[in-house]
Length: 227
Image (tube, rainbow, N blue to C red; front, side, top):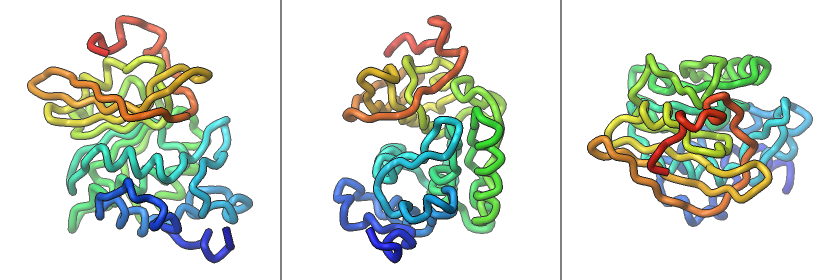
């Protein structure tokens, strides 16, 4: 791909027939991926592929991010929890999707990152682009209880089991999208929806993510029973 193509914020427009939500496509058109990766990798920003961001983590393939965000069916003002801030790129997309006039972009977005070094860099990148989500360093599988309930939860690393705390923090009528599976084994993308207090699970094809690391996943009592 040429440098000109890589510099465009949304060079994959014609390659994503599966992304039918015009608001998702518009959000990707507004967020430059180059702002969230190291300068030496900018030439690869236009590739629809994951890229390293340090600490053994990656900025996810843009198509997968778009697919997961589309599955959330976000509306302006929706309260969103993101597990795994990473580079901040997906966070910026969530800020765009939930943006409300006369409020800071990101006012309804809460994002947790496990690695302080990534959290610091993503905070700087987001601020430089004018986004102001709520950010914290911590255990993503434990969620953000004091900010719950959330209309949507998106998990950017593969959990071996669905964390119960995240299910409990999902609002009734809300949706959670997360990859589930062992790091070296099969992983699938799941939508977890909640209706009248009950959870419903829908599988949506195979994916490949870095593992979600958390003490929550080591305790069977903290796994969602319905899964």
